[in-house]
Image (cartoon, rainbow over all chains, first blue to last red; front, side, top):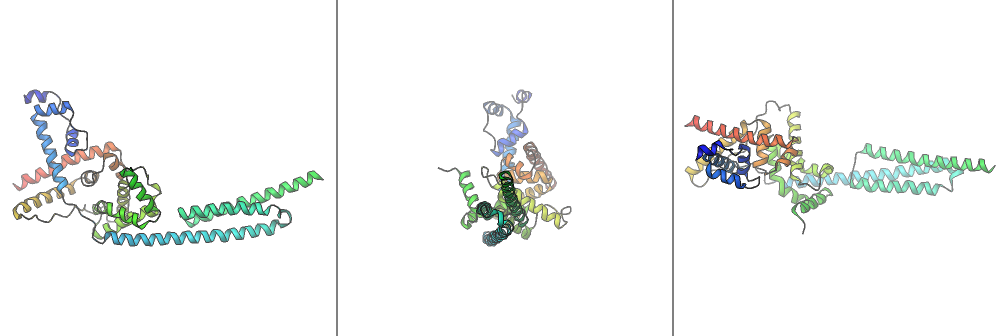
Length: 174
Length: 185
C-alpha cells in the first residue's frame, strides 16, 4: 500500500510544514486521502507538528515590568518637545509675516495703498494655513524657513505685478 | 461594528496626535513583541531602550505608517532598523553572536522540568545556529505569529524568500536538534 502511495505524488515538504503551522488552508480532500495511505507523509507531518509545538512552547523574553511606564515618560517628553517646536514655528511665522508685510507696505506705499489690504489678506491666509499644518505635522526648522521664504517671494511678486499693471494702465490712459 | 484593524487604526491615529491613553494601549499591546524583536539583536539594556525608541518613533515619524494595515509589522521593522543601527554604531556587528531567549523556569515536577528545560535549551541553541535571515523569519513566524507577507515587510525581502527561509529554517532546525540528540545519546 505504502509502496503504491510513494509511487504517486507525495505531499510537498513545504506544504506539510504549512499544514503543521496551521497557517495554510486545511487539508484538501486529495491530501487527506494521500495521508491515509502514505506512512512517510504522515510521519513527516507528525514531525513537523512536533517541531511547531516545541517552537511555540519555547519561552520568549518579555519586556521588563517598568517598560510601559518608562516609555510613557519618554512619550510625554517627546510630546512636550513637539508642542514647543510648533509654538516656536508659529511665533516665527507671525514675526516674519509682520516684518514682510511692513517692509512691503513701506516700499510700495505710494502706489499700493489700495491693494495692500488684498496682499495682506493673501499673505495672512497662507501663513494661517501654514501655521495649522505646522502644528499637525512639525517639520524641520529649515523646511519652515523655506516655506516662509517662498511665501514672502510670492507676496512680493504679487505686489510687483500689481504695480506693473497700474503703471501700464496709467500709460494707456495717457 | 468596527473591525480589529479599524480599532487599531483609530488607536494609532490618536497616539500619533499625542493621546497618552491611546499610546499606553498600543505599548501594552505590543511591548513584548517589540522587546523580543530587539533582544534578538542586542543585549537587555539596549533592547529595552531600542524598543522604547520604536514606540516613540511611531509618534515622531509615523507618516510612513499605512492605517489600512496592522501596526505590528511596522513597529518590528522600525525596531529591527534601530537595533541594526546600534550594532553598526558600536562596531560590534561582525563579532556579535546572536542572542537567544532565556531558558524557562523549571516546572513543578523536577524530572519533567529538567527534560523540558533541556529540550528548550537545545532548541534555542539550534535557533541560534541558523543564518540570520532564517532565524529572524522563523522567530517572526512562530513567536510573533506574523504572516509571510508581514514578515516580508519587516525584513524587506520578497515573500517567496520568506517562505524559503522558513522552510529551510525548519529543516535545518530539525537536523541540528537530531544531531545534538545523537551526539548526547
